Image (cartoon, rainbow, N blue to C red; front, side, top):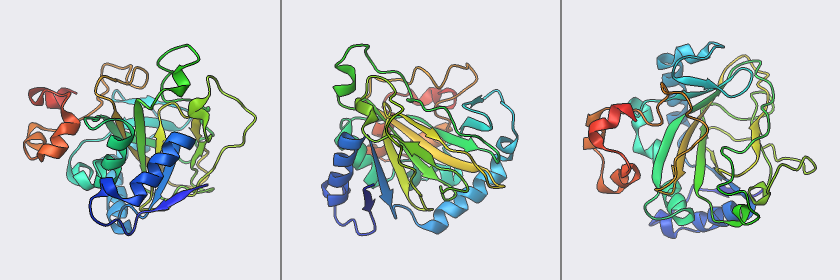
Length: 266
């Protein structure tokens, strides 16, 4: 399993060796694990903020704005506010450079939220985040059209659970049970990116605490996730108009598909 140490990124992230290596991993294996991207204290603070402001998501039931994605596991919306509205988190410069290298320079932030695996959550069904774009043999060979960027708010390990990743499965037409998945330990401050087509699944949470995995979905400008937002009450992105007004031009490009006047309803 290849891991990329991001402690000493110098100069422009887009020109860094780390972005080059991570891009190669994404193209070849369908995922990349980046270590030491965030200060540990910043992620611990985010976990405290999550437990304070999103305490209702610790309940084992589906709300209007959540979707159950496995027993004891829920996809939830997170507001781009407070610590979660920090651009260093949702649009980390190193990650955005990698996204633009892998997708296209005008890639968008298509969705933002968390996958919460509650204590007792069992292994999730192995899946892709959406079907292949086409049903022919060429579809798995196309360049990526969307990436998920996951930031664990507690360490992902054997006790808390992790995400099982099937290397190179973004090139499969269908699921093959034979290869063994990678089961990475992802410490606080590290993150995972994976191709939307990669077969993967959350593993069981055998601890006594929820395992929130903060995620950002980045996509080519023409793409919208057709699977994970089937409820009218769900929101892909949630922020107030004031959030939009304070964006730099570079970060505003990530939201180029959104009418700012409709920001609260995305």
